[in-house]
Amino acid sequence: MAKMNHCQVLLWLLAGLALAAAQSENVILETLNFLRRGQTEVNLENYDNTIQMGAEYDFIVVGAGTAGCALAARLSENPKWNVLLLEAGGPERLVMDVPIVAHFLQLGEMNWKYRTQPSDHACLAMNNNRCNWPRGKVMGGSSVLNYMMYTRGNRRDYDRWEELGNPGWGWKDVLPYFKKYEGSSVPDAEEEFVGRDGPVKISYVNWRSQISKAFVEAAQQDGLKYRDYNGRIQNGVAFLHTTTRNSTRWSSNRSYLYPIKGKRPNLHVKKNALVTKVLIDPQTKTAYGIMVQTDGRMQKVLARKEVIVSAGAINTPQLLMLSGVGPAKHLREVGIKPIADLAVGYNLQDHTAPAVTFTTNVTSLKFEDFADPTWLTRFNRREGPYGSPGGCEAIAFWDLDHESDEDGWPDIELFMVGGSMSSNPAISRAFGLKKSIYDALFAEIEDKSLNAFMIFPMILRPKSRGRIMLKSSDPFKYPLIHANYFAHPYDVDISVRGLLKAISLMDQQGMKAINAKLWERKIPTCKQYPYKSWAYWTCYVRHFTFTIYHYSGTAKMGPKSDRAAVVDARLRVHGIRNLRVADASIMPEIMSGHPNGPVFMIAEKAADMIKQDYGYIK
Ligand SMILES: Cc1cc2nc3c(=O)[nH]c(=O)nc-3n(C[C@H](O)[C@H](O)[C@H](O)COP(=O)(O)OP(=O)(O)OC[C@H]3O[C@@H](n4cnc5c(N)ncnc54)[C@H](O)[C@@H]3O)c2cc1C
Ligand SMILES: *[C@@H]1O[C@H](CO)[C@@H](O)[C@H](O)[C@H]1NC(C)=O
Ligand SMILES: *[C@@H]1O[C@H](CO)[C@@H](O)[C@H](O)[C@H]1NC(C)=O
Ligand SMILES: *[C@@H]1O[C@H](CO)[C@@H](O)[C@H](O)[C@H]1NC(C)=O
Image (cartoon, rainbow, N blue to C red):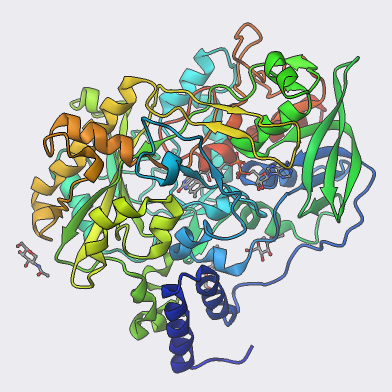
């Protein structure tokens, strides 16, 4: 690759921007990809996709997402085990490594592009009242689409899992697994709690906007301490810990598979391979293989020991149901013969946040920043905002019900993003905002003289539960997603309180110093309520039901006595032999934070439990 001079680079970018205006997001991706190629640290090699898939393996792992890559890497540490990892999507491309472009990835083919069923009490600002539910369909799964915000949740989340009848999942038991995968370089992380040498690199971003500094200051003025929120106490404020290193995304593929590339003849990775069914003997209730659509045909692969489903909280329940594991009545309705009558697909949970927009007199992120020649030069040294995960920069946790308790169990998280819905057309498109709403609230901010940022007040412990259902027995049809947001009034209430907390930060000195002000534009379809009244904000929350993409819980872990449970504490599907689930689906209750890290923990623990069950480790 010949070296480009800055002029050429700039020309490429400007061409990219011009076409961006014409809504051609692929060009944006290609442009950035092109830029990135000159860099020698980044390796363009792929896994060999030409391997002949064997007819039989010891373990078959379905889905190469956050959990699947970790599991496959850990299981294949035993050279005597043959492991097959199957992924519906294609390879991870270089552009996906650049943290700032996170929003754009959702527009590409590496996203399953799911949508919730229409609702009349949530997602009201979105086209057809349906929220977009992106999911990674690529090597690395959703760890390739995500915003790289790194959180573990609260220690009580895991003690609660244990209390619900899951021995071995309490905080003291899971902490070693967090430390095992963490390769943190966060300098002020609490040594007692952090892992330094694990495969998943975690760090601060080496660029900070003035807005993020103001946010961190204002939260402290509100009473929070600056601290390692992944340490002993979660309540506090900090610049974001991210799953990045050297301004590069650290996906699960990069963390677990890349380092062992070419060194594990007993691990086969097959991309563009959609598993359509887990084969289960209805008599012995034993899983013995899978059916997979790949290389243009349907193939059968057998599993000597186990099939492990790590297809994520939407596809895992879908695949289980397609295989006869699920609510018997529902399965019969779509013409599937039930083998195990279990509450698959229920207990769906997510985190939402009604983002609030503010203006400021300091510079906010705009896509044009990429074309700034000085920043471009810095880009080559991996500096500037390129390493910022979609502009998410700082994070704070509050226990609003017990504000005086320094070590509370937070119910609200605020995170700050250094741009607005109008920083780039990709953002409002990713969320699927109605044009009428966009025009009424955000179009004016396109004016380059305005600087705006957002705070997302994210509800941490929602009480509503949704459900994934099959639309049909055809594995190529998408399942139905009933998010059921705000079915429980607590969720509306705490969202409004979180939003008011975000607005109240503008009264703190830190925010005053950057002249931060609530962007006061009314939602046309909420105008029957007095502006800024509780009723108005309730309406606001029901409109801006932004998912933070944390779908989980749809194959709930719990004891046999719990009729809602699908897997036991060793993640074995109740009543079926040789079948496990290991991904975000198993969470009995969603943890208080962003789940990518906790899903790594689940996979690490699952790998050890499997190694124990087959006598490979004690
Ligand atoms: C846009 C977005 C932003 C996010 N931001 C953050 C964040 O900042 N911080 C954070 O902690 N979390 C974030 N998350 C959530 C986090 O990434 C997920 O919770 C986590 O990746 C879930 O891991 P998983 O292994 O359960 O599923 P996934 O990572 O989704 O993996 C499932 C894999 O299985 C594959 N698959 C599915 N069905 C089949 C099949 N039938 N056959 C073969 N393969 C199949 C999929 O293609 C996918 O690769 C975000 C998620 C998204 C989508
Ligand atoms: C895994 O990640 C590495 C590093 O980003 C990349 O070079 C490689 O192509 C990825 N592998 C696949 C199969 O996508
Ligand atoms: C980050 O980059 C530096 C300098 O190129 C390199 O020495 C280091 O190994 C990189 N870190 C990781 C985790 O790849
Ligand atoms: C922004 O506004 C604040 C408050 O009015 C003022 O003190 C500060 O100097 C302004 N900063 C800039 C960069 O204009």
